[in-house]
Image 1 (cartoon, rainbow, N blue to C red):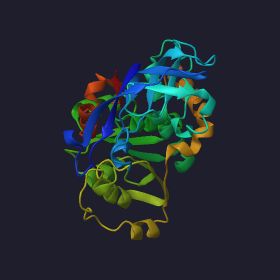
Image 2: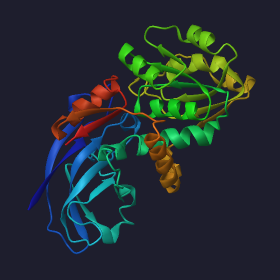
Image 3: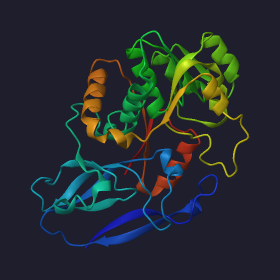
Amino acid sequence: MVKAKKWILATKFDGEPKDSNFKLEEEDLPALKDGEFICDAVYLSVDPYMRAHVFPVGSVIIGEQVARVTESKSKDYPVGCLVQMYAGWSSRTLVDTKNLKAMETLHLLKVPDLGKLAPSLALGVLGMPGMTAYFGFLELCQPKAGETVLVNGAAGAVGSAVGQIAKIKGCKVIGFAGSKEKCDWVKSLGFDHVFNYKEADISKSLKEAAPDGIDCYFDNVGGDFTSKALQHMKLFGRISVCGGISIYNATQPRLTPDPFMTILSKQLKVEGFIVMRWWAKYPEGKAEMKKWIDEGKIKYRETVKDGFENMPQIFMSLLKGANIGKMIVKA
C-alpha cells in the first residue's frame, strides 16, 4: 500500500494564518487500476490567493504542483512523465485518466519540454502567475505605446512580469515593492521608476513619476495603496484588479475613502478577474512568454524553499513578503 501525506485546513483562517490552521495527515492510496497513475510532488506552489480562497475545514489546502509519475497503468502517462495539476498540498496523488471529467478541477496537463529551463517555471512565469500577468494586463488594460503603467507588488511573480510586458509594449512603468533588495531587482528589469512603499510617500511618488497621471493600473495590493493610486489616474484610465494582499488578513473593514466617486468622475474602467477565464487561451500566452524569455525580454526569479513538511511556514512567510519572484516549495 502506497502512503501519501496531505496538509488540510484544520481551522478557518482568522487574521494572519497560524500553525493551528494546518494539520498534516497521512492516507493510504489503493492499488492501481487500468488507466490510473500515481505521481509524487516535485515542486509545489504557494500563492497569496490561497489565503483569500474560501474552502471547507477538513479539506486539502488548494494549490498547483509539478509532479513526476512513479507508478502507472496509463499508456498516456508513463513512469517518469512530469505533470502539473491542482492537486493541492499533497505529497502523492492518484489520478484516474478515464474519469478526468469528474476531476475537472484538477486541470491535469503534461509539463511541456522547457529545454534548459527548470520545470518549476510551469508554476511561475510559464504557469498561472505568468498567465495572470499576460492576460490580466493585456486583455483588460489594453496598453498602448507611450502610456504610463503603475504596478504594485512589483517584485512578485505577477507584478514583475506585468512591468516587463508593459515595457515590451512601449509603456513607461512605475513599480512599488517592499524592500531595497526588491526595488533593486525591479529596477534591473527595466522599470522606469521604482519606490519602496514602506519608506516613500505614495501620493508624492506618483506625482513625481507621473505628473500627467496614470493610464493603466495593475493592482495586486488593494487597500490604502489603491485608494491613493486612484487619485492619480487619468480620465478614462483602466484598472485591472488582480488581488488585494494588503487586506487578506484583515479582520475588520479598512477605513479608506470611498473609491466610487473617483471612479465615476474620472470615468475609469475597473475590472476584477480570475485568470482561469482564459484557460482555453493558455497555450497562446505560454508560447508568447516563452518566446520573450528566450529573447531576453522577460527575466524572472524564484524563491525556492525545501520541504513538504514546511508548507505552512513557507506559505505564512510568503504573506509577509519573504519572496522575490515566485515562491516555490521543493518537495
